[in-house]
Length: 224
Image 1: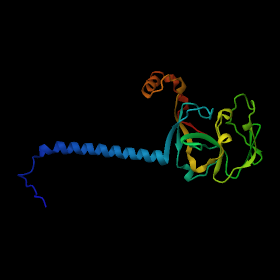
Image 2 (image 1 turned 30 degrees about the vertical axis):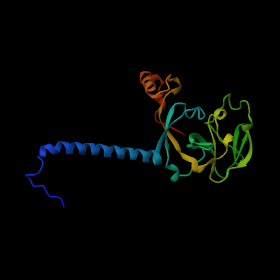
Image 3 (image 1 turned 90 degrees about the horizontal axis):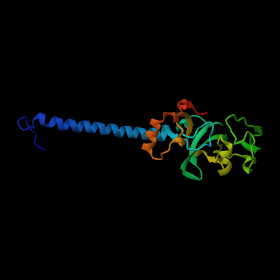
Image 4 (image 1 turned 180 degrees about the vertical axis):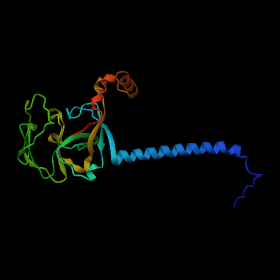
């Protein structure tokens, strides 16, 4: 066991206090930073995650340049309901995230007849759906789909901008295990297509100097 220093042999207090205090402060900041990072990772993984809307497939419910928050734990406590707007892994490329509206639930018989969606033989009322040229523009093969049964643990997804949405009409059912969460609020929005810079810092400077491109009225808008 090492020899214990007596008072005569100890280093004077004033020579050790600054260094030990400095180490303590650095350690405290480091620990706080680590805790903050871990907390942020936990929140992002299990609670809430932020996403940006890059396309117009959900117009006019969600605008290009909307920044939304997604609740990632809600479906552990409540069931998915028709009309929910959810973020999920794109079935054909799971490195990409898509956002669409739930139209068909497991066990539903779904049919599309002249752009009109029918669930179990009843026309679905969809005030959120928009079309390029009024309610019934030029038809395509995806606007007439024979009745089919949605299998267990699968969903049929569609974008609100019906004529400009890559959704279940093209790539099929969504496996419910691929869901990331439910969109619930717009926390920031700007007309990003008006920003002439692709890089972050010049883009940020442009936003600061051109606040008119910020959609102030969309801040805090609920997603439904």
